[in-house]
Image: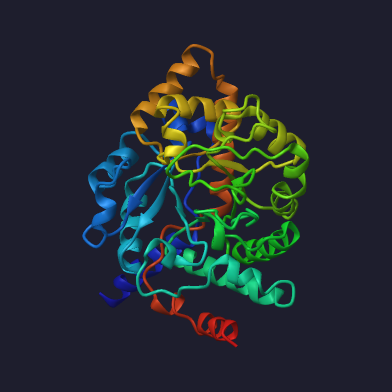
Length: 392
């Protein structure tokens, strides 16, 4: 019996040691291709997060989440609220087990897992505090990025939607502020690059946000649609350099902001999310970004005030977006994409190019399915030492 048990334990370990197989695009049906372009919101502990259960606009009950994965083949999940690490690991394992193809798991962990209310974890300082350390403590910023990356990996997270590349140039900004590494473009670029390299050393995909810059705004795009009205010359001097630095140093993805930037877009009132000039012409062609382009959350009023789920899905993909983050109505978004393919508004080659970038990101990030819970990977001596160094 002991020999048999040892055999099964060894077999399980061997299976986990090999990465789950990411399919080739030729193996995917049309429904599976479209599903790969969608990352839905989820929570791991609905009993501990009552405020997350029925908010407008996302559906977050477990049955809905599972249906999106099994019936609509969505390619990823971002956790918006969490309980204990054990709960998030368990939910991630369940969701991975019912998915036909491995899910890309995301989290907003700019200052660690605690940003999304994971309990019993280290809370690191926000970017503004870390930014004050550069350039005299470069190794410390790198190591904090790496440690946050290690904590993400311990929970089965593949992509951390960080670092923030916005320059904090408006003291009245209600949404960026302390999430920025500083008020100087060079300062932000240096600190964000160090933080990014740390996370990548831990095997975590990184994301520069919120392109082309949300730092000098006085509105919150979660609540309203607004305009960044600076000239192109000013944007090239202040807003864009940190993004260019991160791109030049290998950032894995870029998140697009829900705001109008008339100096860069086709029209004065078009959001960057749906602007071909901003995403394809500027970001891809002029700034030479070849990685994954992701929308900001599609439940934010900065975009829902303008379009329904079908409209924004098609417009964003046409503009050059690869991954649709949290569409409010997933079935409607999928039907909109199918209709666009049928009427020629979206070509099959365009669709495939977006799907291929998602699959490439998965091949890079998904090493194995979620690990088992180990508190020593979350409250580490290194983390405590880093916090101690910050306080000295």
